[in-house]
Length: 409
Image 1 (tube, rainbow, N blue to C red):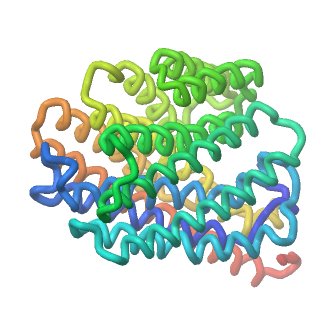
Image 2: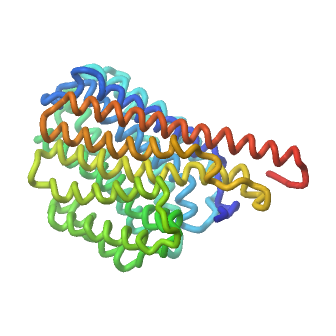
Image 3: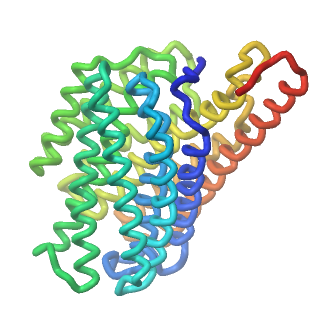
C-alpha cells in the first residue's frame, strides 16, 4: 500500500498534536490512578475533572486535530489548498498550549484565570480548524456518506463548544444555563458521541477497510446509520441513536469480516474491541447513571478505537513520509514497530478501560485505580511504539540515502 504523495502534508503538522495527545492521556491516567481522584463526588473533585478533560480535550481532540490534517485530504481525494498548511500551523500553536492551560486551571476550584486563557486559545483554534475542514469537505466530490458523517460531527462540535463555554462561565460565577447538570450531559454527548463519535464513524469506514484489506462499507448503510446516530443525538431519543450505533457497528464489522488477511493486526483488533464496546454503551444507556454511561463511551468505545487506528495509521504515515519513495528497497511498515510494545499498547488500553468501568459499576475505587494504572502503562507503550517507529524510519531513510541511487524530497 502506497500513499499518494500529492496528498501528504508536512509530518510535523500531525506529529506535534499527536505527541501532545499521548502526553495528555498519560497525565490523565496518572491523575486517575492517584489516591482520592476516583470518588463518588465526581463534580467537586478537581483532579478527576482535570483527568477527564485531559482525556477528552487532550487525547481525543488533539488526535483528531493532528491526524485530521492528513486524513481530510485522503477523504476528499484532493490536495489541500496552499493556505491549509499555514492555518494548520497556527491551529496547532494555539490548541496544544490551550489544552495545557485549560487543564492546569481546572486543578483548582474555582477555576484559575489561566483556565479562561486556555479555553479561549483552544476554542478559537477548534473553530478555525472546523471552518477550514468544513470548506474542504463541502467542496469535495464523492464519498458523500463519509463526508456527511464528518460534517455532522463538526456541527456537534460547534454546539458542544458553546455549551462548554456556558459551563465555564457558570463556574466563574456568571450563570448561563438554568440546569448545569443537564448542560454537562448535553456537552458530553455532543462532543464525545457527536464530534468524536462522528469522526470515528466517518473515518472508520475508510481506515478500517483499508488497513484490514477489506471491502468498503456500502454508502447506503453508512448513511442510514448516520441519520439515526445524529438524529437521535439531536432529539435526545436514545432508542433512535442506539439503532444508529448498532447499524454502524454491524456495517463496519461486516466489512472487516470480509477481509483478505486471515489474522487481524493488533491495531484492527483493538479497534474492533472498541466497536463492541459501543454496544455496551447502547446497552447501559437508561440502566446506569449518566456519568457511568459517559465513562463507558469514553474508555470502552472511543479510546480503544482511537488506540487501534493510531497503532496502524501512525507508523504508516511515518513510513509514507520517509520511505515510500523507494518501494523496492524500503523495509515494510511492520518492521518499524516492536510487536511486544504494540500488543501492550492495545491490550492494556482495553483491559484498563474494562477495569475502570467495572469499578464505577461496583463502586470499587481500588479496582478503578488498578485499571487506570494499566491504562497508563498502555499509553506509555503506545508512545514508545510511535517513538520507535519514528526513529527506525529515520534510520532506514539514512541507510537508503547512504546507498545512493534514490531521490527523496
